[in-house]
Amino acid sequence: MATTKLGFIVQRPGLKSENQKLALTHAIASQSVEIYLDDDDEVLCDVAFIGDGVLNCIKDQKTLENYDLNSTESHVKMGLLCDLNIFVCKEDLEKFGLSESDIVMDANEIGGDMDVRVVPYDEITKMMEEMNHLLFF
Image 1 (cartoon, rainbow, N blue to C red):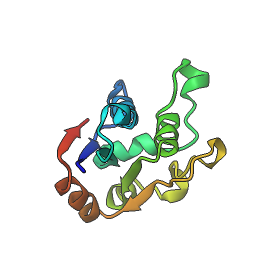
Image 2 (image 1 turned 180 degrees about the vertical axis):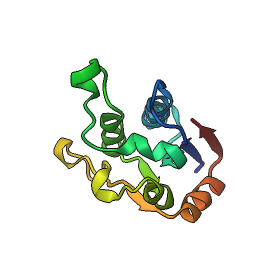
Image 3 (image 1 turned 90 degrees about the vertical axis):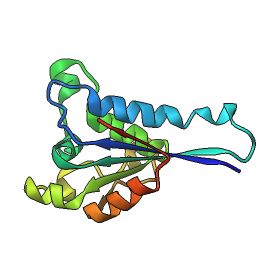
Image 4 (image 1 turned 120 degrees about the vertical axis):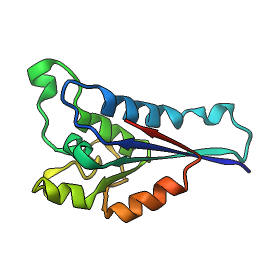
């Protein structure tokens, strides 16, 4: 049994950029490769928002109604629906004066049962050390 661990680190805000959506899209797509794998092989994927990247997780984004674009909020919820581990750096949230009540925490309304985990940076560092492949956005 071979397990490949992929880590996607989002460290930039979504202003004038699609980086955060690309990270989430790649992470979600990585879950569809199982049809090409041997029976006991798997791909595990974690996404972490750090630094200015935590601003991508603010809830109640209005991009669809204002710009006719899907929001990063909807991408986070799709990631949760696909059972991705999504982490948000606690220290960076606090730096911006944000709390868990200000960000997307779950996807219950669309049937997701995973929650975003707000964790200290040390835990994100440990997660990054466990990855086979680490991508920064």
